[in-house]
Image (tube, rainbow, N blue to C red; front, side):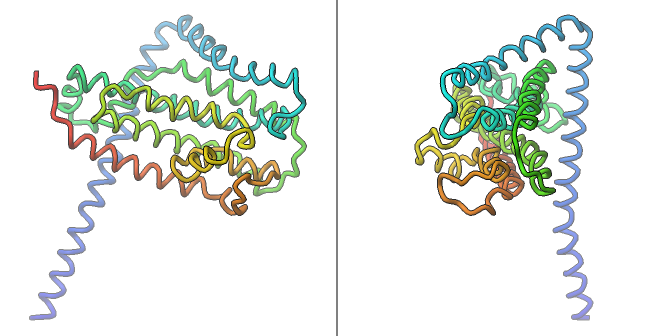
Length: 294
């Protein structure tokens, strides 16, 4: 009897542990499905006016292209920037802009959360049987942001053609890893920045300093910045794992902090940890929300 009781207790304990896992998986599945449905709705709305979409997408492409034009103007007067040639800087620019462009396309609406908290419209999202994060992320999905992604990819293609790299299977696989992991890291920063707005409703610009400011920082070689700043974006806000550290391995460059080559392979790990921490911050922020009282 004692053995049967112990077995029953073990089964019940296993079931209790299994139910939350199933619930989390179901919640994730429901959130992704809701996100897809909302995005599809906004895409249909956007494509109803195709000429307007084409013009706004081209405007987004042209506006972001001026960042690379500024780099070209610099190289019109110098041969290297921080010891890096134009194709090498273009490689940094292309990987950073593409990764950020994907995150901005998928989660760029997160910076509107502070406005929703202030005016109380977040309450309407809480009443719907859909995860709030999915609703906020997909709200006003802007397909025109594909212009930024396209521009980053074009610069990256130019860099790959112009660079003389000893391509190995590992270096080839590093490219998609950099873009996907970098997009995940930027996405985590978007979510964490939005979570901060539960406490500081006027913090959209603080979030933008790490997202838009972060991608601008990563477009230039780490050697042009002070080592304290490089340490900050490596060990505090891990933006260096978006492209700096793996790009140094691909380009055959030494790390200015003297880190081992193995850190170049850590972006997927850092991306996973960043997303997990951003999820914790989001849930904590959402629990503190008390509506506007109006």
